[in-house]
Figure 1 (tube, helix red, strand yellow):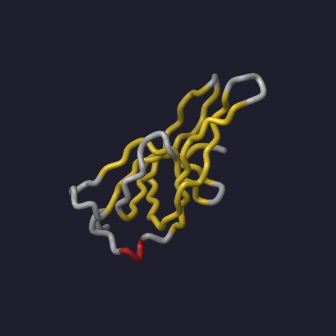
Figure 2: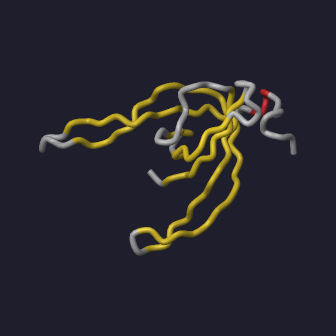
Length: 112
């Protein structure tokens, strides 16, 4: 398997949407967090690991993936990626060789 940094551009076959959190005021004077689309781009998604964790007293499957895309400066933890109905929380973002050609994101798939 080719390294993610040297991956041919043809492997970027998934059209992802970058979503950023936005606080929306509610009727009680508080705010709820919603995610709004920021940008769309082509990427490669690779499954890395799957585990089972206990959340709120019940077992839940957690899948982590690696997302490779062309370099951009607006990705960071706290934002998320959407692939149709699939949602991925961004956990870490790195430019592995410092060349600003590719980004590697470690993401966790969440249930909508």
